Length: 134
Image (cartoon, rainbow, N blue to C red; front, side, top):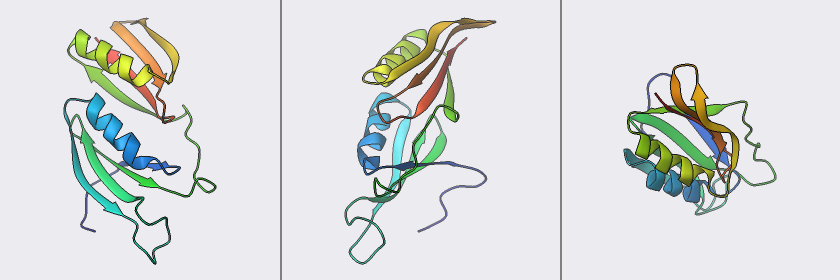
């Protein structure tokens, strides 16, 4: 595999549904792209056909994802979240609606200090997002 990033990059480990999650995020965020997708092959330590590494960008930020056998996969929690700000209120509302569908709204959307709308939402894949509209 070629070097995908410089610096620190968020790496998400899913319990067998990484491809479904990545496709969901690429559909939700308009400024997104799949950079690469490598799968486990026979003889590798992982389920053949599942995601070894998926590299994708959301709003210019690179993220990585992989599948792990469900019995070994760590669980996500809201102690770590992905933060993004919006310039357009209708886009904020659309992304919030998509991420909260079958997910869990932890806060908001509501005003906070100089922020017009802020929310914490955990999506159906258990990834928590902080969405901000100023």
